Image (cartoon, rainbow, N blue to C red; front, side):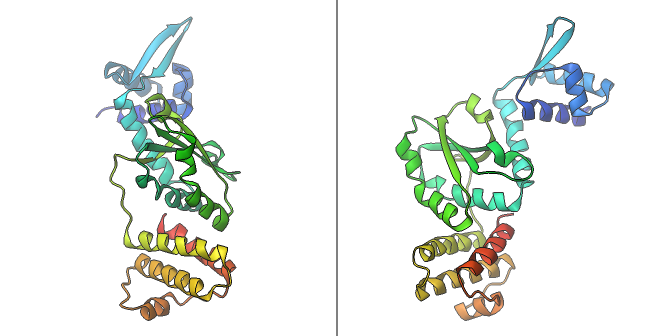
Length: 261
């Protein structure tokens, strides 16, 4: 399609700011050529993606937030999430692993300081559903506590109604209507994560230590396309020295970032 590149940049600019903008400001931010920008704006308006109104001497552009614009948002959110720091992706993937079990939660969005480049203070997640209650958020306390204890990252949960406006309040990281599946390495890492949480409650338990070690070894094997026949095969291929809980945090965290990257 002609002027597709300019249209994409203009749509991205409108989506990122969530505000109406003058045509001049939009062209500056999108960094597109003037002629191609004006042609792209005409096409976007013609197809109903934007509205352009006159305000004094300026023309103001607004996104038409409907299902068609939402499809573009899904694409942009996926691209933005995939480009985020691997540690953030690990945290998010571990958290949303519990959401398919929660029928009332339709969508989860990431927002707040975690979306800014550089350091973040905590992870804010907005849950959307029909008539969500505090008890629905409380039902996620276990996975929340597991992440906070092992990785030292605070997760703040928020709730809103499931509607079109709220879908634009952050990056969509989960939808109940989408196929949600983990590969073998990710599944095994989730097993490791459950066992390592048990170990945080009883750090001197040798049996729990062994279970966590085997889980992590299998996750590492599957990540590297090696399918062990026995636990011994998995541990031999893993070949990493883990002597204590801090080793689990360091090595387990690095492997998790690679698996969920």
